[in-house]
Image (cartoon, rainbow, N blue to C red; front, side, top):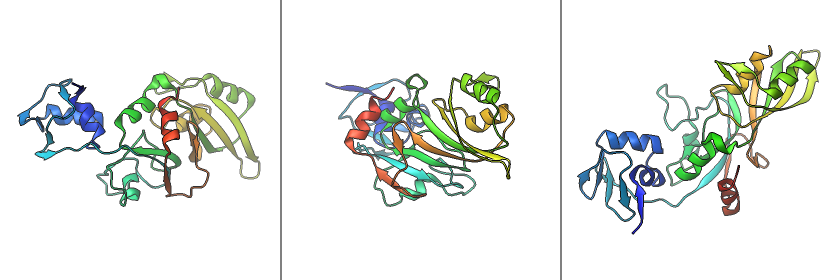
Length: 239
C-alpha cells in the first residue's frame, strides 16, 4: 500500500500548487472517500477517491515546458488587473500548468511551466542553488570596485545576496549604458534590479537568458517547447 500526503497528490494532479492545495484542505474543500479532510499532512492511499469542491481529481501525466516569456506579461495563472498571464500562452495545452518561480512583468526570458509539483518544489528550494543567467542593460558603467561588490554580494532590503558571477558584455559610452551578464542562484523579489541599484546603476532592461542548463536557443518571444525526458531527468538531478 502506497501512502502520500494529500496536498502532494492534489498538486501532482495539476489542481493547484502544493501551498494552495494546503489552503484548500484547511478551508474544508477537499474530501477523501466522501469525508472532509482539513488536517495538513494527512496521508492517503494513491487510489483514494479524492474530490476538490465536489469534483474528482485525476492524476495528469507530467509535462514541463520552457517558455520564452515576453515583457508585459504576468507570471501567474490569473491576474486581478486583467493583464495577460503566462498561462494564456498555453491555452491549447490540455494540462493545468504553473510557472516555476516568477519573472517580473517587465522582464523577458526563460521561464519553466509545469504541472509537476515535485519538480517545481525541488527547483525553487534554495538548497539546490539553480543558476539563473540574466542580461541587464544598466545606466552608466560598472567600475572594477562595483563588479567586485556584485561578485561578493550586495545588501538590499536588509539582505546580503549570495556571490554572483559578473561579465560585462558591451559598453555604450555615447548613451552611457552597459550590457552586463549576471549569474545568480537566489530568487528574491526584484533581486537583479535591486543588486544593480545597490551599486548605483539602475536597470533599464532585463532578460533571463538561461535557467539551469536551459537556454532560449530556437525560441522567439512568446514561444515554448516541451522538455524531453532526458532534460526533465537532468533537472531532477540539478544542484
